[in-house]
Length: 406
Image (cartoon, rainbow, N blue to C red):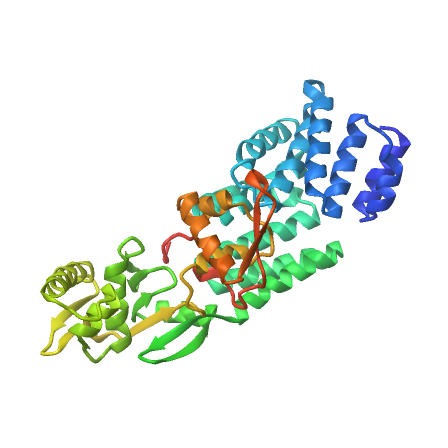
């Protein structure tokens, strides 16, 4: 490696991007292309950075597999920042395997952190944890240790476990302080703030009060029958019933939970579940069917009793009933939650993360754009979406996650 390449690499490591570019801006050999690509990524020109890294990887070819794998790793990191989640999977796996085979422990461990971060974004928490367990933490550079800690904290927050999340954030903070990189410290502070701010609302009738993530965890551990409108689940202790694909049943359960311990008149249930302003015989027949289905679903937790006016929810063992609602009611809150990270997402990546069709996501984005909550730039496959402003609340309970208690 010649002196200019060495000087450019040292300048990049020290954060002096312009000095690094001055050293290699006019060179087209493979090492120079790779350093120019990394420098352009630092400056925010991700498209140009990707082009340079691909040229560098081709120039290195099969004769220098480690250097080529490092270029692929840098390209995968850019794709992750660009939220091009579908494209990076194979690239990351290939680069990580090559780096591990040739003994580049630091970059192989960094590739593992990137893979765990991708899995966290799409809600595959079990797989993300498995990847983190395989990582040699001692081989990670300080900056990558910050990422490792934040991914660990993100998994714990999605699982609503505040103590492990706080411990991981503190570990990340120590690494960020040692690295001396302000951007990493800011990212750690954002993660810490999410633990303290309201993450949900406890709803009782027409009243509600905010809950932090720690208070949500305490509520779930209290033994109360919790009707979770953030994730459309009903839970008591470690037992739960998912109703995300049964919106009518969940609407009935939530109405009964908000009124508890009072009953809910049949007309109110019809309006809540079906939007029926004037009920007829067919509406009442359908309500009886849906109440029967809900009664069967809630059998492990509670019973539904008919009253003269309507129905009342009676939890087992005299447990309390609590309704957990999002901080802000929005039919597309999950999309906003993903966009709240400040990055530009493609609609296909949003669909991948949420586990829905791209067309469903596009319809949601169009409605949010009409409400002036999101905006897009670019065309075709290059189209990206960003939130106009952060939603103003932590989004852990609205993002894809495994069922509580796992």
